[in-house]
Amino acid sequence: MCWAMRSLFDMTDQVDSMTDAVDDSLKAAVIQDAVTPQLVEVIGKSAAELDNMRKVVLTEQSTMRPMLTQMNELGRQMMDLGYAFDSSKNDEFFYLPPEAFDNPYFQIDLKYFVSPDGKSARYMIYHDGEALSPEGIDHAQAYLPAAKEALKGTTLAGSRVYLGGAAATYWDIQDATKTDLLIAAIAAFALIFLVMLLITRSVVAALVIVGTVAFSYSGAFGLSVLVWQHFLGIPLSWLNLPITFIILVAVGSDYNLLLISRYLEESKAGLNTGLIRAVANSGKVVTTAGIVFATTMMAMLSSDLLSVGQLGSIIGLGLLLDTLIVRSFITPAIARLLGPLFWWPG
Image (tube, rainbow, N blue to C red; front, side):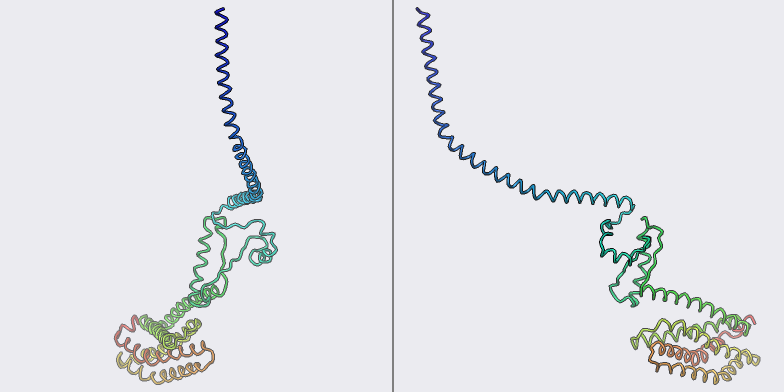
């Protein structure tokens, strides 16, 4: 009986617990019923946002697809570039892609700048100023050493480099003129010295003649530069230097040789007396010849060619300087100062 009552009370407690649980479930259901519409609304918005996101991703994918293709192509070109640099053994940043040789416009210019065997190339160099000016000619002198220096340490080291063009051509002419003038000066002075030595039998007299001839030419050319370039503002032609040198050296040595030869003949009467007689006897003839020759050369100033007029003026000034100053004053003064030493060792 007691056990039955106890079981009844236990069942009653369980029913109460279940009732409380059902009440809680009902409350939760009420809350869920209120929240569910809001949740449905949020899920709808999220679905719309996800749909927009899907469209953006698809758009980016369609945009990136050609870029990926280009990146792959660029990567392939970079690999080709790396292989080309590695095979060339050159650290210079110059690269010509193989596709360039398929360009028809490139093929037109290729034959003008690259030889058919591919072993020679031509480069075009442009000046900032006038190529034929002295500055342009001097500027061209730096091209060849710079090109040879650039080839050092590369696969082209040891290659032959040539320089052409107007500036380079005149540079070669200028360099050849300097070399030829130096050779001509050495040969002329050496021959004059030997001839004077054989005639006068005096080393000092021969040296004096050579020295006065050199002084006469230097003075004549210096006066010409002063007149033409500084007074008139007209540069002298480069041809005048070697041509006038040969003429003035030949004529000047003849005039001085005539004076020294007459001095040698008259020196038997005494050095001072012989010098006076030599200057007096040869002065009229040599002076007249020099003035006539100089006047004739000065007549070349009437030429329409500027270089011809400059040539005549240089020779005319040189003859007047040699005739009126060097032969008349400088050479006799040197002979008088040296005295017997002038004829050493004769």
